[in-house]
Amino acid sequence: MSDPEIQTQPLIGANSQQAAINVGAPAQSPRSSRAYKVAGLTLLACVLIVGQAAIAYFLFSQKSDIKSLQEENKKINTELMKERSASMPVRMHIPMSAMTEMLDDSTKEEASTDPEKTAAPLTTCQLEFAGLKPVQVPGFQPRCDKNGLYERQQCFMRQCWCVNPADGQQIPGTLRQGKVFCGAPAVSGETR
Image 1 (cartoon, rainbow, N blue to C red):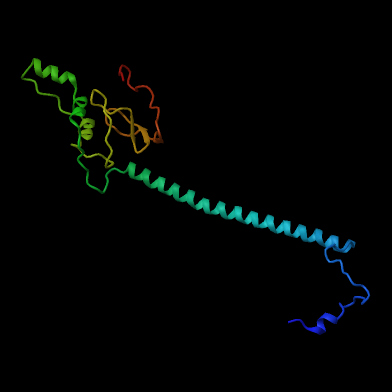
Image 2: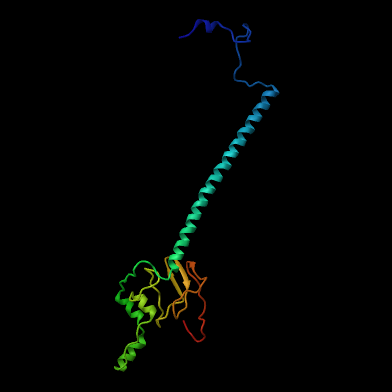
């Protein structure tokens, strides 16, 4: 395994009288210490450049995620604002306890006192709430007040907006994520 020629050969440029070589101690010449400084600064610069490249990569990858979320939000908003949906309206099951809230109590009193009078017909809001009339957004169920008018604030899938109580039409610019303050009644003498 060992070659006898290699063991007897002296190191290149080494005196045969010098038996030990100090390998662990760095040379103390000014030229080699300057080389260590340059190598250290070069390494630091490389680490900083790689760090900046990683940050730029993550920012660009998140930018595309944010853009896709914005596009999805825009699609949902257009679905909510469509006049008619392509799908068929679904008749929803209404519990009997909710039906009493939709009916006006004054019509019951009038019907019991005068048998010739007929019960007042349901309002558009009440018909949409009961699933008897199709709504613009499938699955949406408007909230009606005790008089059968639309409540000023309507909400669906965590988005809320203000409507005209008489016809249920959305007031432009009021669509928000979460609750919306719709203000006081527009018509004087009208109570909420």
